[in-house]
Each structure stands twice: as structure tokens, then as C-alpha cells.
Amino acid sequence: MGTGGTIGTGGVRTGGVSGTGGGLSTGGAVGTGGTAGAGGQTGITVDTIDPNPESAPAGTQGPIGTKVNFYTVTKSRTLRKIEQYLSPTTPVELTWYVHEATSQLGTYTKIFSTTTTSTTGTGYQSSGDISVPLVAGRYYGISVRWTEPTNYVYRSAGSVTLSFGSMTSGQMITTTGEPSLAYKPTNSYYPQRLTTGP
Image 1 (cartoon, rainbow, N blue to C red):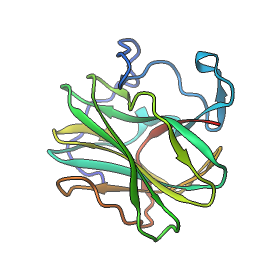
Image 2 (cartoon, one colour):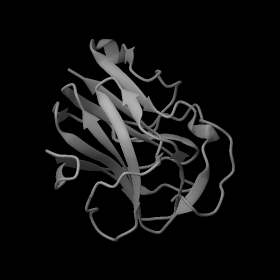
Image 3 (tube, rainbow, N blue to C red):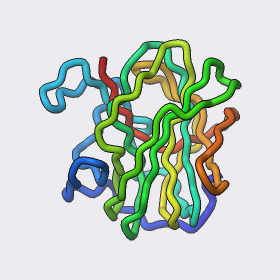
Image 4 (cartoon, rainbow, N blue to C red):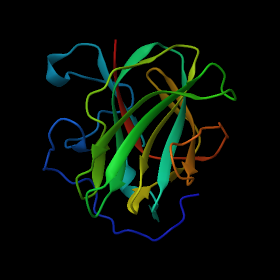
């Protein structure tokens, strides 16, 4: 998976923070499971799925693309923000989804979606502030979808341990319309950053 035209490297772009509702995030990522004191809030944790996304292989997906990572939750948390490492060359519409299932191979039902417009350049694009319960013992697909060619990166690797559970698999969906999720084990994933709170 993740084939396509190679994009230029260049690392995370700093500067150009967008307003509430998404855009390019700035600043270094908190290490996996690290606690952040963003905005003076307590109990906020930022989990980074791939601490070095700038070194990951690159591809171009278009015109339709959804990148989803699947998660097993062992500790109940509230999802506060989704960030995806992308490299849009022009502003594109991004739709963020959270799907939930009661078993890993079960039916994934959409419980949240929101739409933002990206900034341009290489870095983390953001869903903006959200509030989505992640329940211990359940399974989630967390994804972003776009409708214009957009550069992305992926990583060939196994599961990643997180503060609230684990990331177990990543998938690329190229069907049109709202994505329908079905879990399949893979050895790849897409760099994301998830902010959770109590």
C-alpha cells in the first residue's frame, strides 16, 4: 500500500498556525504517551504514532483517499484532537472520522465526523478541538479523507503501544463517498497524533 509519486522531503514545517477548525500544527510532538500541559489543562496526553514521520516513505493519493488507523482501547479516554501528517500543495477539504466497534472484526459504526480545510506544506493537519469518548474494551478506526490529490506518508511496521491502548493496523480506502470500515491486519500505518483527556 502507499504507492504513488514520491514527494520531496523537508521535515515538519514550523510556523503558520491556522485558526480553530484545523490546519497545520506547529511545535515538536510529545513522545508516545507523554503528558502535555496544553492550555493549562490537566490530564491531557498526546500520543504520537510515528515520532519521525519526515523519514517515512511518501506517496500521492488522489483524487479520493481515506487513510485509517485502527485502535484497541484498554483505558477509557476522551479524544480531543486528531492530527494527520500530510503535505498538501494546495488547500484541500479534509473530513475526519471516528468509527467504533465492540469487537475488532465487528461492524464499525461512525460516531463522529467533522470537516476542515487544510493549510499547505508538510506537517500535521488538525481536526481542531473535538470531544469523542473512547471506551475501554472497544475498537476504533480513526481516519481522514480528502477529495483532491494530496501527498501523504506511511510506515511499514507493526502495532504501536499507546497510553490508552494500541494502534494495530492501517488501511488505505479509495472508494468514493463516506468510507466503510472493515478491519484487516496489515504491517503498515499512517503517522497520526492523537490528543486525549479525561
